Length: 189
Image 1 (cartoon, rainbow, N blue to C red):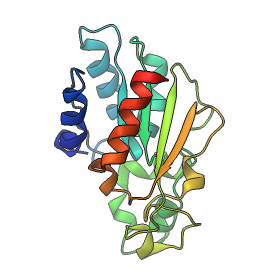
Image 2 (tube, rainbow, N blue to C red; image 1 turned 30 degrees about the vertical axis):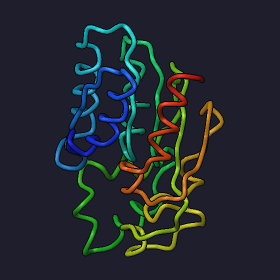
Image 3 (cartoon, helix red, strand yellow; image 1 turned 180 degrees about the vertical axis):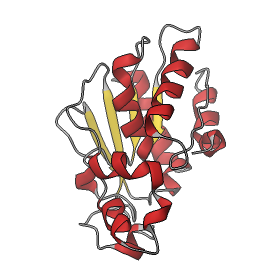
């Protein structure tokens, strides 16, 4: 994920007075453990005592697995994160034409968050448009889904707030209602 992917959400948060740092990482071309260390160093190096994490998709798995080593307090907002594992990734890994795309992302996407150690209030915003996404090319997802991640893949009892928005997996990065839900959770919850 390029750090520029969050441009719209970052601008929305800055408009609300938040100082925003954007984190980019290589989802499939770098080992997951490398990305965990990179996130840990990034968050722990900022001067603020409170650092909220707003993440998309696999970023929720990365954040949850890294949280035990993050020394900052704050909240976690996940957008369409397949914390229970991704049916699409499992299907992709079995197909000759698509398995190569996963590389280092295979294990975390297939397994999600196992035995979470939760250290902050968390919110999940999941898409329900049943729209176009990579999953449509490799499998049939349970409904509702966002075209890439099924709603059931985003649900867990350790999440403080779970909400849905009628959008697809990638459009949620620009969706007005998603941005409103992020700000509301950070300010009011």
